[in-house]
Image (cartoon, rainbow, N blue to C red):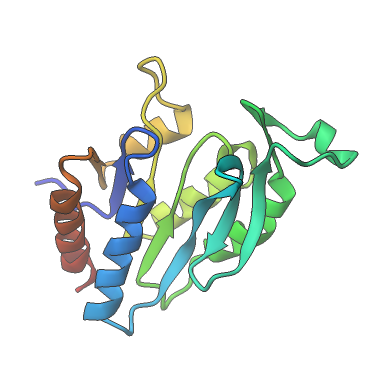
Length: 190
């Protein structure tokens, strides 16, 4: 008999609502069990005049730090890795996100939005994600869809973990996915 899932991965096309889905699941979990200790972060778009100009990391208690931008012209940003037209501020990401993923005895659930290309430029990020996974605490994360039919190696490793369950989100199954994930997480948090 297979071990019950502890790693819940949400994937889907860009803009389909993965971050919104996780936020709604967390809202339901906190309403039904306000004493849950949840750690992690979200990645949020930064927009100016309707145009996406970057991304920021947001902790579950509302602290923010830059992740990537098209507008950063600092001298050090020239050496930062890029994804498309975005320069990724790895140091800023690490300073806020990594402390949120430290395994603590009283943590009930970890949330990571997302395990993607920008975040994986941090050489410390994926080993930290693996420690979270090995802690055997429930883990809810978003992952990108495979590009050209191939996953990022770190994402493939998560998907192939024996305790992983992948949920593919579409515009037509959002409510069903929210209910499924909520139900399975609730079962794992008991």
